[in-house]
Image (cartoon, rainbow, N blue to C red; front, side, top):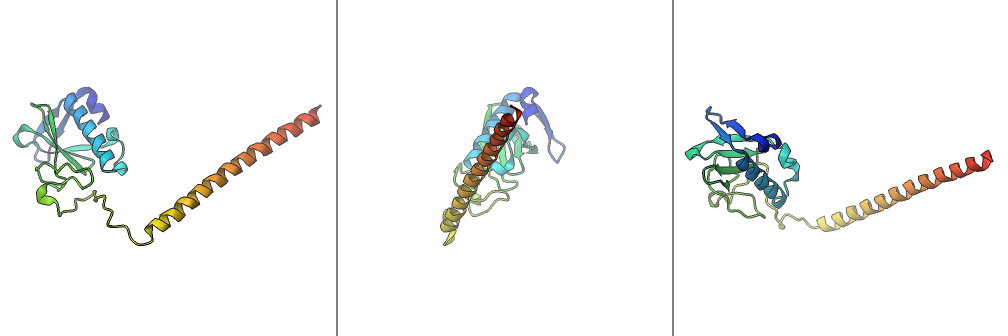
Length: 169
């Protein structure tokens, strides 16, 4: 995606139809991907500039683009607009736009799209918070111990330098 911002991008869909996406549309796509990645906590996808995107279709001269195999967008190049599509494969409906649910349309609200899971609070099991607190405390104590060990090594090195300076004089 990074190289496409400079000079546009030419993509082909599985049927052999090709479309050239101008730099302005690529930049708009980049921004949408970065926003959606943050809103949906999809940091496992990678950075927006490193993601691969593919042309799914060119219906009505508006290319449908899949990014990272998960996020989908419809680019209206003539009107310089971008629509977030439902993440259900093959669906060209606009997503509901909710940042706390998977990006699906009203027809697919009961469908879990591959690669995305809802940010739900009802899947926290009893004891999960206590386990997380114990794990967090252990991580903090381990980090503190590591800092103390580093300081200890630094002081030992300084003492060796001091001792060598005393022996040289």
